[in-house]
Image (cartoon, rainbow, N blue to C red; front, side, top):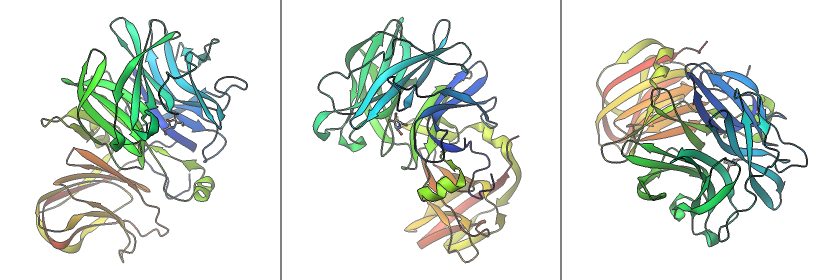
Length: 419
Ligand code: DQQ
């Protein structure tokens, strides 16, 4: 808790966490995530669990799933999904019982209260991938459709041709039948499709896949096949394995794993590794691409506002009096002829330490100690990390290199810690 890099308003479980699996039920937001209780280092994957009434205050709950010796998940309970059945909640997840070669099988667990989970005695429910695909066979994502269960599983095409998402069907979540690929990707989005998520958004469907970064694919879903029309990256590589929930207001909220970029030894010493991203509200933009906005709930963390008016900018210019390592900024640029322009946060007085977010017309930047999450024009995000070794890296500046940028306004809030 004394680590100056530990975020104050992002959820951190302590020890190791990755791959959030969000789920909404009855007024409460649940995040299940990959968790290693043995330390802040990647290890035997459990399912950690946290709950929030408001997307701001998170309470850690008991571990939901742990590996069972001599079972299909003996070496780890990997990523999957949470669904509501007729009478119970269910988790479908990937059990791993061997690393070399990696042996992945899909498993089932059920619960009455989302807290105590019982694994299905007949696990695995899916032991082998269909013929003709590569090594990846994991991260089941199920949904109810037309009176049956469908499930997307992350996979890959042979010979490095690109990712694949396989589609299965079931009546009871136990017995699964392979249908066909829901989607065959190409090399542009990586050699496999980890952590698929698939959902309707407005008039379209969105498929999310992860490899290298999180990709969105937007298109049409017909005859149980997904035809992609557009795709793009949700963020940069430090935001990974993102998945969504649909909440009681019908909002589709995206959560990702924010990875560390400091050395493993430092992560171990700090006692925590990995954080949950801020909730990102997804929308369909008029041009048919995917839109991202910070969940409005975050506005309730804002302290008093500082406002800076219009200015012409050349080089680097301090925002006088703007200080802090837990901030929200809204920066509007009216025009720019600069080669590079944007906002710098976590700046030391000599600017030897700084984190730059460049470009765009409207930047919404959330600074939370070592985490910087920026929303750029509502159409993409940039997550970066910074671990300054000096405590004066708290300043904020604007910059325009090789040219001029016209700043319309800057609003800045200190962020309060949720409690
Ligand atoms: N991490 C999991 C896998 C998933 C990958 C294991 C993505 O199930 O494919 O923790 O980060």
